[in-house]
Amino acid sequence: MDAIDHAESAFRQGYNCSQAVLIALVQPPGLDRDTALRLASGFGGGVGRSGQICGAAAAAVMAIGLARGHSTPERPAKERTYQLVHEFLQRFQKEHGALTCLELLGCDISTPAGFLAAKPRHDQICPQLVRNAVRIAASLIAASNAPASSP
Image 1 (cartoon, rainbow, N blue to C red):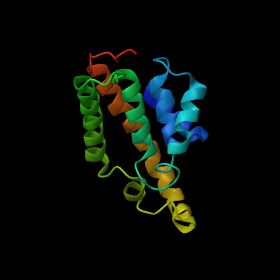
Image 2: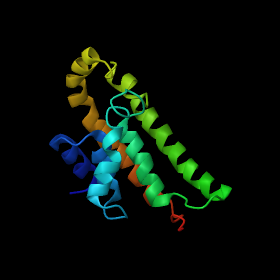
Image 3: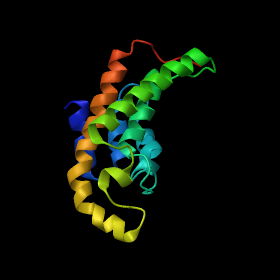
Image 4: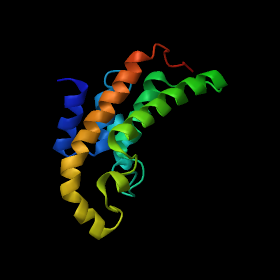
């Protein structure tokens, strides 16, 4: 099973979008499954179901940082990481028209009524967001030949 299918499968099993994306992108590159699941657990629903940045997108940014991020304070290292993240966000937004759960789902999931209204949209829209976040991030990680800085 490739990373895209792995992410969608995890999402359909009940993991949130962020967890599904992160475990698909970071195994085996450097984060064990349990740690990845815990790290991403609060990002579902647009960060704690607040409707802000899509958890799938947030996890892709975490994975890009893990694979190609910097661990030194030097400006060039930061800029390389920021360029990859910026490219990811541009592509994701271009494909989906937005970056926030509020806009992607068309309802305010931070409210009880909005959360209920979002359920059918969530089931229809979010699997594709998960798949595309993995696809875009994996392609950027693979295309970037700058290894992550070491401590």
